[in-house]
Length: 156
Image (cartoon, rainbow, N blue to C red):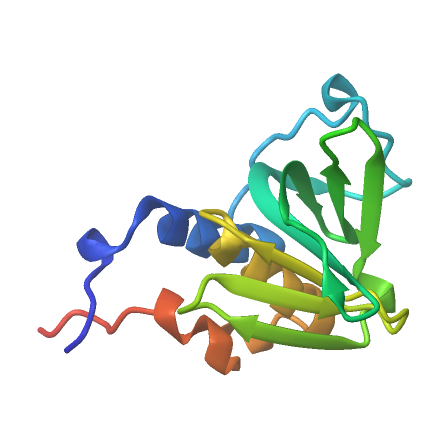
């Protein structure tokens, strides 16, 4: 059974739009980082402001995930934690990724013994950004974890 464009959930459509923006095939959505109290690096582009669950494993214990405000950029994820602190999850230091889109989770491993788990409705967009940043734009059409975002071409 193939999925048609009309049957896709809004978060999947947004993830597909983000893929086009990241590859410069569509204009980027505007995210006003300064209004969110964020400072971007020179040349860094913010693509989305979403909500996400964020959990951090410390030792063998996984802390209770918390709902965070998350900005997706071309260089990192910026999370505003419930206590107001900011955490930058830089794509350039990710050493491993474990995506389970059907289960609604993405784990980013930074090699520090504290993998970060993300989830929630914005997971498709976060996963698109992660695949693009970690594997390059070509992976947007080949990476198996993005298969659920693809649709078959209409039959003529």
